[in-house]
Image (cartoon, rainbow, N blue to C red):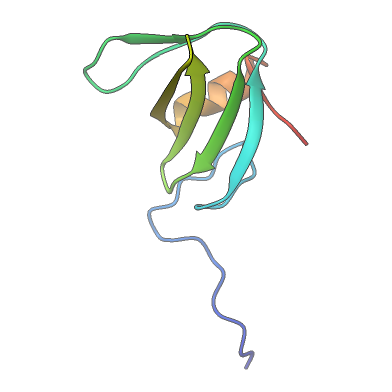
Length: 94
């Protein structure tokens, strides 16, 4: 038996195409305009060429960016974030 702690993801973890585990962070950028609605709130748009900071949660991706000199952030469900990866609207920097 190994003394290494169990590194399997939490039971409520949703696998995404981001390849990140909960708590991991990464830099990314928007290659095209990204629009989404955070909960019941207003439609939010991130314009192309914005630098993004990502933090993976169990079932969402927390995205942070600057807009008009103001810090912005939103949690997007992994299923929706997968679409932005698949369409190339968001690219995770390697």
